Length: 377
Image 1: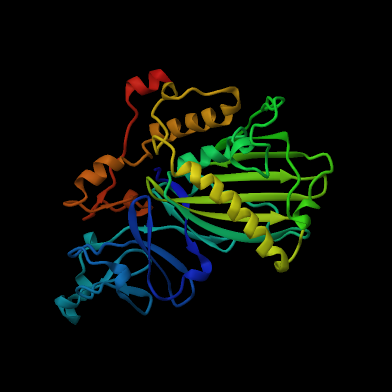
Image 2 (image 1 turned 60 degrees about the vertical axis):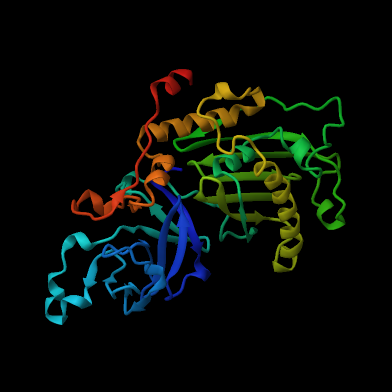
């Protein structure tokens, strides 16, 4: 799991003035809105004696710890320690602060930047260019499953699995003529993607099947932005398109929550959401069956532990990107963190750690690539 990226913490509709506890990257956070409606995301652990901030209450624009009443602003600054008495609350030590993370609300989702990079250096939130434009209609589908998010990203980048995992996408390997056509990767600074053509059987649902080309040939492709965001374009005809954008939040190494925004220029309007969601949930469930059974649960450290084919070109390139982010010191050392968890509280370092040096909570440990692993790649 990588810090220094934007992750979806919640839907905008879920966030109110009441504190909301969220787990991301194996860390606990508290989210809330202030009196102006501005969303905030803080580390969930009080620096006094480990109180659970999300179990507290709001006092104006500050969140109050339920253990001893310490209050913290949306910037992570402690502004009240009741045990000091009213006259001494102006002398709160600076090291009482907790990590506060930048927040953005886009596409009906609350994104939190979990890292310490300055604003100009932060990787992007994956854009949805069709969102809010005429002729396109969005609907959101939230899914949660017990599988590693990198495996899920690789599944999206895998054009070969459709033939065997999704009966509506392929022919289950019954055709001797089946193969994955050569495709070209397009690259950006934060990811890669491709488009290709494939044959698909007719759909049983008559309404959905009207969207398909007569001969069954469709154009489709996928790509990624960062380690956890993916896009998929499905062009069923020259006119009927689905453009899907999935923002995955790793809860833990083997627990993922995904937010899929499906943009469509056909079957417009909420009256079609149920049919679209039903089909999408079916497709997701087929993927989840595979992902929850994959061994090892997490992609291997080197490609020598798997036999990759030309159809896996996008997956191989994705793994190269993750090695680059690892080399930057952005991969959290989960094994070490879990080993020390009983005695040590960790926090993902926030931007404030670049200017303030006195902190009670240790930053999460990060992993560095081993020389042997780099040579193997």
